[in-house]
Length: 218
Image (tube, rainbow, N blue to C red; front, top):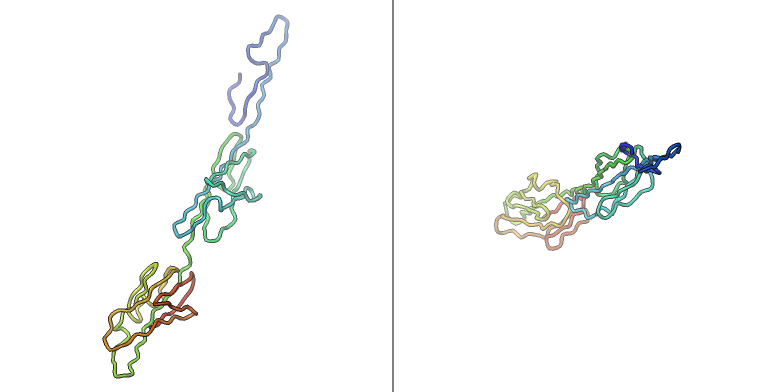
């Protein structure tokens, strides 16, 4: 027998209970075969900003080779020769990528190494919303625009008065917002809301896309 050597399998030929007679020669052959290594590539997907992709929507490359799709359970086991390996993945829109133990990973014979690729969904670009109050005093009225409070309620709520930073160039998530006003003296009639940049309100509601900017006036 021989003591085990890491990374090699052992087989024997004519090495067990060998009967050697007087004057006879017997031969025992011990063969050691180097074992492949195993590279495990794991996928972690974090959908905390509305993302909907799963592990098998992503792929990876080993040492710049052909892209391989991740398994649905997020783990691919690859048999490799002893050597150095780097794992990368093609960029996927809407997700950032981070790697753990994926660059120049040394895999010895019979050894297992694990590379973890994490994709985190990126928050969509914010929209910009300004709420504006216009007061027309053409019949003896004296109210100022600050007499009314303005608000937009949707994925977040912004509110304030004319010129208040809360409603001037406010950075808000994309989505649908309901516009409203409060307060103000009697004797005034409100118009419908009117929004710039081709965005039209419907019953006081507007829908902003990521990166879109608009000013809504009443």
